[in-house]
Amino acid sequence: MTVPEEWPLWEVFVRARRGLNHVHVGSLHAPDAELAVRHARDVYTRRNEGVSIWVVRSAEIVASSPDEKDAFFERSGDKVYRHPTFYDIPDDVPHL
Image (cartoon, rainbow, N blue to C red):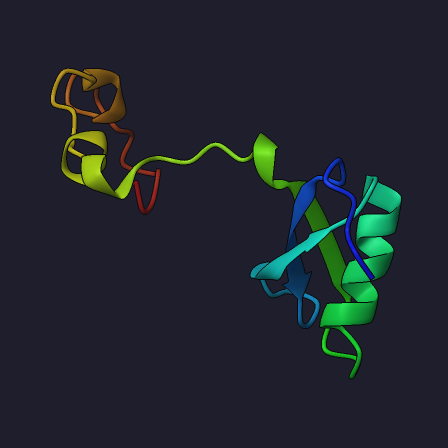
């Protein structure tokens, strides 16, 4: 079967069991979201490997670049509101 060029690429995420995270398992081409979920079920959960499937158009995914990881994830010292240093924490508040 040939895939028409206008069919978008979808990324497939499957949750193996309740309580676990969805994990990226692969990609597929489909004309719309409904068929992408059906195709993902047929391709990636043939042996009852999952309880939930997500499909996301690849073109809609935005990610940080691994080349920019140092600058992107660098701790920011100018966001003082993240640190409870300028107000008193009540004694009866545990684990803060």
